[in-house]
Length: 312
Image (cartoon, rainbow, N blue to C red):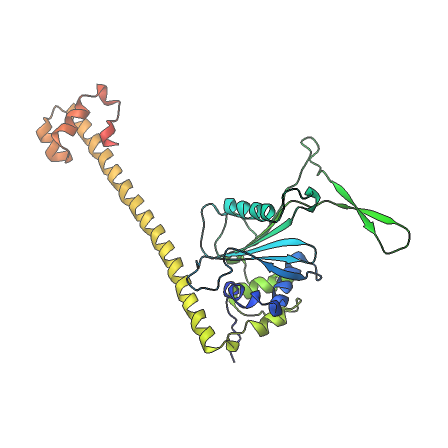
């Protein structure tokens, strides 16, 4: 009996959009946030809500709202994107603006948490999970500025309140799957192991990981679902191969251009030496494989100290 699961990006495009399967996403978020009380209320609109297999294969995203009124943006990126951080900043900013009505109090601004699951190494680093947000630190002391807000407590008849730190800026989690070494040390590792290997690591115990094992099993797919899934895998591989091919062609063109420049420089240096020896343009042309006009151009430069523009 196969223990293989469907890919997590395909699950996000299909199964995990069903409210009955929110528990799988909740389990993943509970492990990442280290908070077992995460509860998804509903899915909001995102760019790839469509289940059409002709959608772009390099990215799958989902926007959900939880019981703490946070907008949680989950994105899986299969191939490298040059300006990925810029696109991430745009996405979170767009979510904030689109969920803030004109005239609404700023205290009600949306709290956004962005989670990126990346199948490429972004930047240079020695970890597979990175967290970031906006912080203010003293230029002189280096200490963080803490801004707090008052929260009323209604558990008793007498009015009470407490102060908690304001955390209004977007928070970012970057998970680089390829850097993960398949070593389970904490709960979120169980989910990253599943995302990377499409199977559950032995002795996994994090919340709802058993639901993922059950609901994402390939063996539970209908024949029609299996065919759509297989087509998605093929198209994803083609998409990745096309990008890799373009990169390789670009590198090859760069090498060829470099070789041409190198040959031109070598011919120029040879020409300078032959001119100093008093050889004619015709003799130099046969040796250096340059035209008479190119040789004359080199010859006309004072003391050969400048590089003719046509030969650089």
